[in-house]
Length: 143
Ligand SMILES: Cc1cc2nc3c(=O)[nH]c(=O)nc-3n(C[C@H](O)[C@H](O)[C@H](O)COP(=O)(O)O)c2cc1C
Image 1: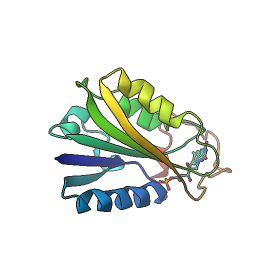
Image 2 (image 1 turned 120 degrees about the vertical axis):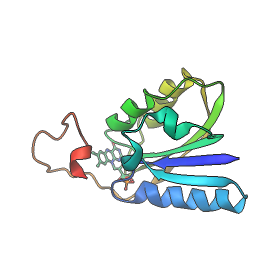
Image 3 (image 1 turned 90 degrees about the horizontal axis):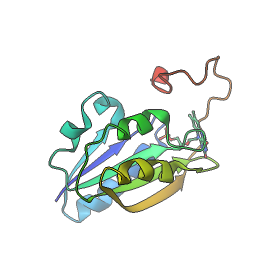
């Protein structure tokens, strides 16, 4: 079984969880690839997802919801027929609608959420960033 985990992580919390999940999956003998979202974000998702039997997506919570960059990326996903995926999120205080946001987008495209988990991470919100804090590119300008 080909498993791909795609993780968006700026300060390492979600990446750490991704690697722990990856270890568990490797122990079960799966063919696994862990991809850094920042490196694949400009490629068409159908290319990245081709040949993948199980998808894992890891993302932090931003502003009580799915980060806008991940939301926009999910909206470009191809339609599939009941393909399974799991979602893991990290947060500092409040999870908000993050899981529902992702599922609302992907369910309509045939992706089936088989499991999700939230993990408390260290807070990394840069509260005193200069204005505009919510630019169109946000959070890419922080890379
Ligand atoms: C722009 C921004 C907004 C955030 N908004 C929230 C939030 O609404 N709720 C929350 O619990 N944590 C929030 N956080 C904290 C992150 O979700 C948390 O630190 C996460 O673990 C960061 O993941 P990373 O280390 O993989 O980048 C925010 C962080 C940033 C940078």
